[in-house]
Length: 191
Picture 1 (cartoon, rainbow, N blue to C red):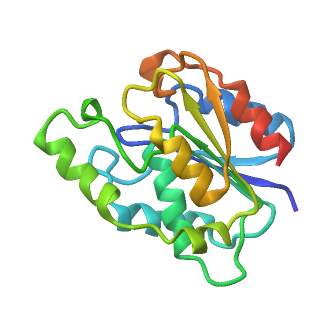
Picture 2: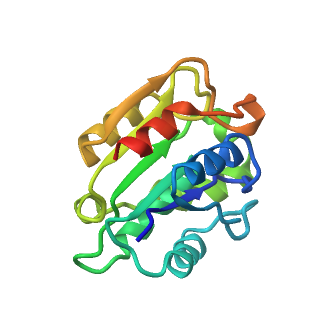
């Protein structure tokens, strides 16, 4: 059975954004089956809608199933893992610019705060999440204006994630001009 990879974009993201098309092409060259779904209501992402959507598109999860998330897409993956039955487990997970806390720049207005609040305030069951994936790799940028540095410690402590720090990659989004992200390709290939 071929290895399947699901690349989950972030808030206001889309499948053709930034480094997603490049990564999809590179993974397919290596024999992976890759999906970069357009997540529902990306302008106002809601936990329940995103987790339900992941349940639909992933269907059966096993050790040949891998996840790559960006920003809020990382949280969607973790919350999806919480919904899995005992024994259901992914082969590995790469989280790019993951967050459980955000800077004020990420939420400049009331609308952004209202959208982010459920994601920030709804607790995660890290014990259940750790049982739902073999390996976690969390990739951060040293100049991400949205993700505070404390998130590195949180992901290391809560998920025993391997932490990788990239230099000057911002929030790793299309607006940062990131069209290729070799560290993600290397990370998923190493799992």
